[in-house]
Structure formats: C-alpha cells, structure tokens
Length: 117
Image (cartoon, rainbow, N blue to C red; front, side, top):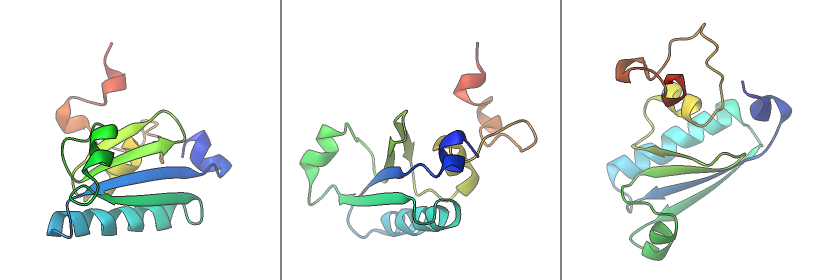
C-alpha cells in the first residue's frame, strides 16, 4: 500500500456515469467493492450522472463515461471504464504499491507511464 493508504488518509472519489446503463452499474459496483475491501470507512464517493449534470462533466473535463476521478489524496488521477480490472484500478489510484513483486497491471501496454524515461 502507499503511504496514503497505510496512514488512513481519506480518499475522495467522483465517478461519472451515464444513467443506469449496464456499464455504469458495473462501474459503481466494482468501485464500491474495491473501496470496501481496501478503504473501509476512509473514502467519500460521489456518483455523478452526466445526463442529469452535464455541467459537472464539463467542469471536470470528462469526455467519456464511466470515468473515475481520485481527487484526494493528490495527485488527481483518472480511470476510464467500468473498473472491472480491480488490480489496475488499485494501482491507478495508488491504493497498492507495485514494488516489483506483483505483476504490473500495465505490462501489456509496455509498463506504467512512470516506468518510461
């Protein structure tokens, strides 16, 4: 886990969805499962329906849904999709630390962006 996850720091997350489509429902379910497993009692989740609040999507520069924003702890991170790959979501949100002992969830893409010179 990262220092933020280990220290009990609170995570503030905002998930943008498009109504109650299957992908949106899956994204909400997947994110709640990850948060309850890794951050029980230490996260705040806001779900924003872009059909009802298009201005929020514009303000946050969201162009696809579902999109997850991790607002705190910094840095801000974005994850697009239904969040089915829990390992990739954890890694992207800095909930777990990839120290070389775990398989890099971005290996199929040539590694994580921070691995590049």
